[in-house]
Length: 357
Ligand SMILES: [Zn+2]
Image 1: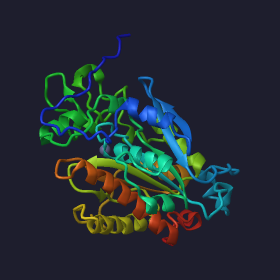
Image 2: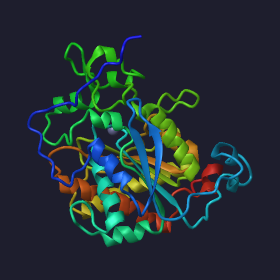
Image 3: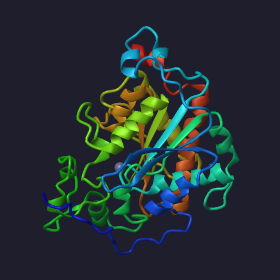
Image 4: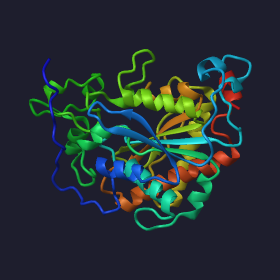
């Protein structure tokens, strides 16, 4: 058996230096999570390269287990066989850093952890309205699911050329050509002995965790741990936070999804757009009806708990400042939590019956 290749962190010219409150390195994430005292901490998985994947929870008790999983209980006459939680307390989960090269949401989560722990984020800013909203929920933050990919990625891609963006995210073959799309989605795992650098997308074994979503054939501890956490916590909302080279956007609803969730995703596309626009964060127009996302961890998340699961892409490029990235993260969290008070994210009875409400 040949030893697994060892890679060094990607480098790139012309990147903007990070401000000191942009803490996205694996040792910084680890230290911040270990210092949590106001919240609870759970280890979700250990990565192929031996790093811990953490979840941090704030507010209200964890759910009691029902007599069945969502998959069986949603076929029974009583979804409470799965969902035992006080219906007034919803569980909102924000999943960050599944692609290690996309640090924006990790930076946001680290600032939010500081806000919840000390009343101020890492910039020293208060956000009392957000803290009050969070108190209405059980909030679960995963600051970085792909700690191996994060370890191979820089602090930011702000200032990278389009070509470097692709190379650093999705890797470079041994001959120097970029892996890029669609090749990056043709391998599970990416053959690490055939690349010069794997990029920050995959974990330490070369797996793209975002697409580790086939029941019976889960290949990463990270995806398995995340899905188990979603199921155990009976998550009502699972927001998968990624980054792309455009402004902030909620992606299309899932191809395989509950009808009610499809409606909700379209509603949140507009709501998030409007909130980002009101905050002068320059969002592109919402995608609107018609399109669908292929199966991935978002699909599997919904199957694990019956919760509303969707993807939000933050802006990773230089047209948005570091401060704007943090604001974008906060606005997204606030918008979900504000609307969730009036309209449950995932009323399970309606979801299970295939109704739209
Ligand atoms: Zn991504």
